[in-house]
Length: 240
Image (cartoon, rainbow, N blue to C red; front, side, top):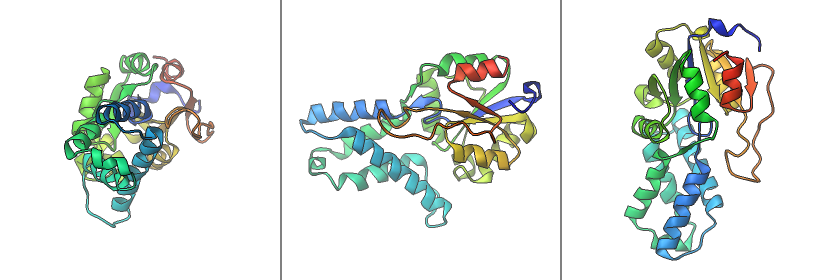
């Protein structure tokens, strides 16, 4: 670790993938839907493509190719788009699609998340800093009993990470200097962008973010202030 943890006052956390597992709940929801409607589908493939469509929707906004819309809408649009490639989609009603879309608000914390976050919350301000909608992140936090002092999302500035406006939102909302905040994420682009705004950075390796057998970049990066394998290790490193 390259700095004194006592200089920190707040930790900001990416949510999807970093604190919660989105792949498993989405696959389970898809399989339950297929069982009800009596069709077969490769749900790991569907979820991988759905997540890619979500990222493409955000990137289109960041590139100035479309106006801002919430991630809830991006998810729903991406779902409709990808389902056009599957014959069984004729059996999936609009109501089914709406219900499947709400799964993004009921994601499951990783096994280390609650205890590690609780320990960190006992010493530091803790805030979600997510690209998710306010409604979805509030529900994720409630569903997973995640102890945040604040929930901040790109929706509040109508943008998405890695736009500097999202990190500035955290500085303004928490009332601390950028170098008194540590951004915690399993996505390196997020940490690189936060570091450019003066934040400290912690990388958490999440090898199962996209499910078993799918490659994820979990290589420690010495340019980040911390590289850890889970939230409990981060709490240990930061003296919580």
